Length: 206
Image 1 (cartoon, rainbow, N blue to C red):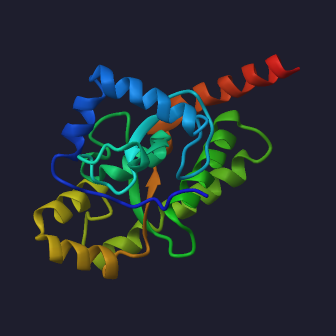
Image 2: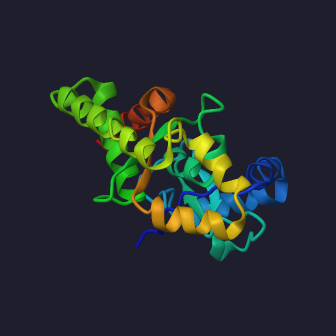
């Protein structure tokens, strides 16, 4: 059973996340979490040994007990740092209106779509069409929130700068159907690496 994947924007989370990645005791703990979770993202189910992170399930990066830590792929990791999305080439995406699918399910779908698009196989055209269709839903978000607020970073700053009660109401009522659609180009290099990892695994097994 996977964890529900929230969209989180909290002042200081990004700094705490960056600091602990350089902390030897936490790095050791992180490896134990990877092994416990069998190198599987606990939000979308993607399995790999490349580019995994450990995130805090409740979005509070001050609570580092092992039962509040979970393995996350890059697509799911960025959901915990909305205000940072798109500020580096390691993250990217757009907010879309997608009430029929959860964030974890959307990220799992994107893993499949991105692989099809990169491999340029028989389903590549259909994958691109579906991805473009999803991306076009950002216009619905801008109609609700305002021009430019389909940008995760801008929306994240809005949540941080609002008072806690206002941010909670905004997020729970207005934006309950909003999802973060990962940007294909920002993750393309990692998709290639994951594809190569899969090929190597198949070769070993055969």
